[in-house]
Length: 311
Length: 293
Image (cartoon, rainbow over all chains, first blue to last red; front, side):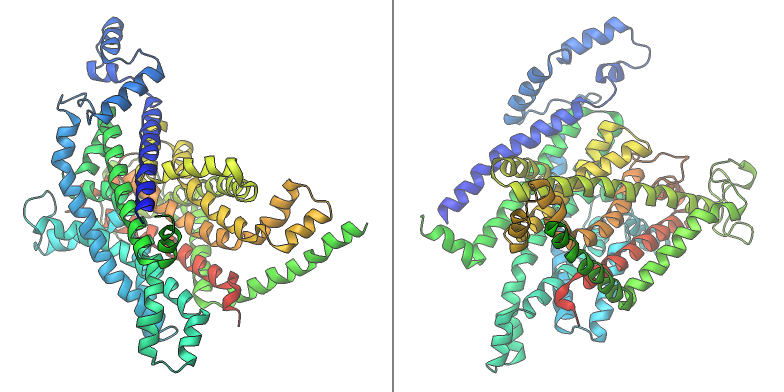
């Protein structure tokens, strides 16, 4: 186990460096000159050139990339082109909101989606199954941000129950979490159902049944633990989806998280912010995936066995 | 000549298999419903704009922000344009973008996945490590960044939506190919003298396409949703072009007063995505030999 964890941790380093290189390269080729944008339309050519030199934009690509990586290693992501506030400072302030939103959404998505999927699988072909699957299908068909707009329309503007924008009390989190949960539950229920069905069809379940075990025991003791493995993996994918989608959801609710920070920066061409936000979200996501993988290894005896000998 | 014979023989069987799959697909009620909805929708967005009698982009300030009525079924927007016409023309943008982006993604994924899966070795390792990197960036985030780098507009948005998806398709294709790689029919193909390109794309690929076809159907749905998100945050397709997400972006300022401006394009998205998902589910059931009656 120890070796597995160590390998897995070590592997994160090149991946994250790769992510940093990739993000830097993509943003490097963004059209538009940041120096010209900062100085505005009236700037003279020599002024722009001087600022470009000062910002290090005239250096060769590899020099700039190296500087970016070196600074990122020291958690120095530069300053916003426009406000001059260090990016890391803003990110530290906004990060908790995005993470809270993400983990709450994921928690409720799993809490509702997985049991629904298992229920549907164990009642395959019955009315309950059809009802759950129909609901799930509707859930995955609406864009999450549109669902968010509808929730605002009903609960904030018509009923005046919950605030539509900003953060402050727990009430501000209800609608954003609800919006991403609704669109996630469908996917999760469908996944849980199909993974459960796969297991129920397998031979050892037939064996368990044929040796006269009660159906309850077959489902909860034999089928469920095996079905949970792929579900666990899908939880990681769901989180990626939520982090990605949070950018749009945060925009809808004007939540000052990493998502809105990044979207505004994209529209203003504030490159340091875009690079740092994506990198931070990728690190966060990689860490969660690491935890998922470790949990997987912990639960799945096959993986544990593979590394047990080489301890 | 014997080689030619042995190649034509399985072809006949393939046809009957396609027929059987089609039969199972047609028997699947939800798949048929999805197909009918999609057919109606396609018909509407292709023919519809000519029938409404309004232009999707021509500004008519005198009739701005009118609630739905007999004259304007979906009402008019802030520039006095007929929302129904815009929704229908918007469908061309959304579906067009979604389909083209998926074709590029899936095409890239199929080629790359087949090669890595079949060849294995160092090539496989390098590509897979590269995909690891790409996939540690949450999907929509990557699309947003690529879209920001490329800029807005139809072709650039398609590319942004497509590039992010290649990784997923490659992985899927690779694992399908690896599953069939050691099957006897590939050994047989080698024995009758097929070269590796023929073996990969002529034999291994068609035999591992089933999950791919399902995933392509759902890929179009996902990309329509992704495109809507992109346009909503101000990338992707720009107003005045009537893409659904772009319409929502404009409509959100009127959420208090003219909510139909955000309700209707959203419903269009949902209907489209729903029909594609229904079809995808039907295809999955039809292609799964385990569910054969």
